[in-house]
Image (cartoon, rainbow, N blue to C red; front, side):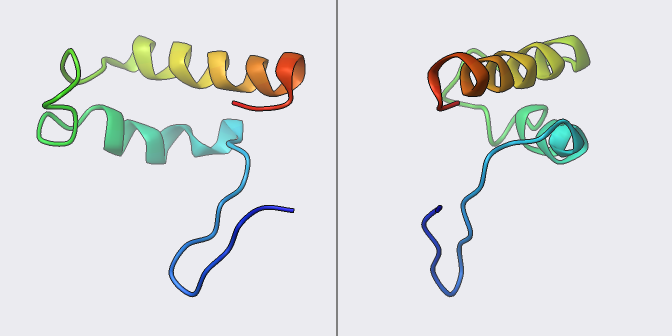
Length: 60
């Protein structure tokens, strides 16, 4: 079971989240406090790493 509120629903990431993650992780304003916005390959690598953590550790 995942936490849920009226405004927020949490769930595991899925491969189908790639496009939505691109919109977030490739946005310079969103990623200003990080090392910068991600390129396409970095978004895929990040998502793949989270999905592998689900399989290995039970969390992403």
